[in-house]
Length: 189
Image (cartoon, rainbow, N blue to C red; front, side):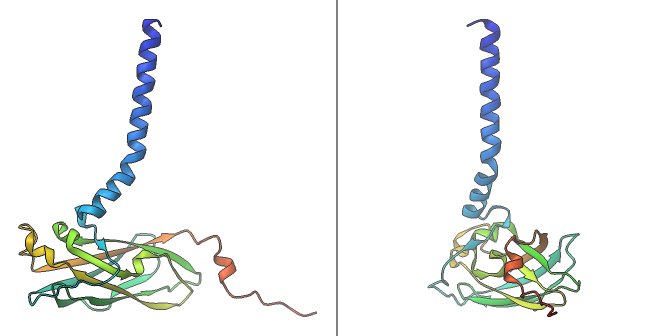
């Protein structure tokens, strides 16, 4: 193998390696955030905590819309005080003021970021695509608890409040949406 062929082979190897790392970085970062709560990423559980403490924490609720989202979206309560480990149930409201169906998905996080590993959702509207018909208004629940392990974390244990934030984004309408809608009216001759 000539010197030029060796250089080309090494460069191709570097390109393949860099491409592989770039491809793997997004799923790896997503996994890392879910496991550690990094960046305010919340956790998910099948059921509530088995331990409920007497100590309370305030959970604030925030709602916003991406620039192109035509809905109105708000938290139905500004905050709630719950005991650590207690299951809370909060509601958000969305309204589609347009004359077209609009699909949306909600991105979310909590602040301060170090509490993300301890904020646990049991059920949430953010787990699924939402489609609102023209003029439709819906209440969307989120069920959650703050893991008592928050008290074992030196950075998170003194947190007086956690803010749960959602931002709704326009999403492409599902391909099978037409099949889910009402039957078209037929005109008799």
